[in-house]
View: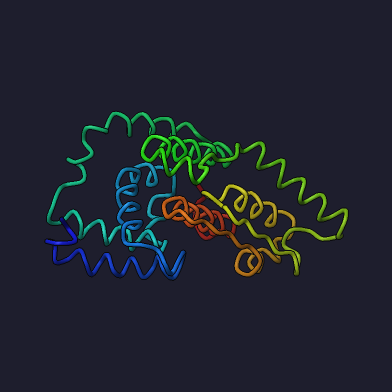
Length: 230
């Protein structure tokens, strides 16, 4: 209805489409973006709870999403009223998030929420895209193993010039964030270069991509001392 009847919505939507095409996939469909906006509305409270207050306003994709959501809801419905029936579920999840203290727990929390969300919200998508996130202890072991081989076989550390990382199916970027922390610890002088020029990650699904972009950008700025971490 918003596409047909809301004069504010098409312009905001098209601007966001351009951001998605430039950042993720030049062939992304309007239907996929519609689906992401629905998913975002359903999970926005949780995102706000996990990340530092105000952080999402610093993220380009997050800012554009809020503009689109504002245009969408301005003429059709109130999000708080629309999601009111789910309030007790949000509160339970938010209460659980309050008790999490460190990075590993936060990452496990994010993965669990989104894995369960997709398995319940879109069973077919979860199945065809293999949305089952790797547990944190396994992520940590795999990253440590790669780091050890890199040092023993090639004499290199994470963050050294010439050491490039690619994560072709990044999900919410568990592996990338783990490696980012390791690179900062091993090679702080090369950390900025590693983040900007040597770390690559791809994701075909919009919502995990959005969470991944928040995740890795938040971690970079936290490690760089720009603002408070999780």
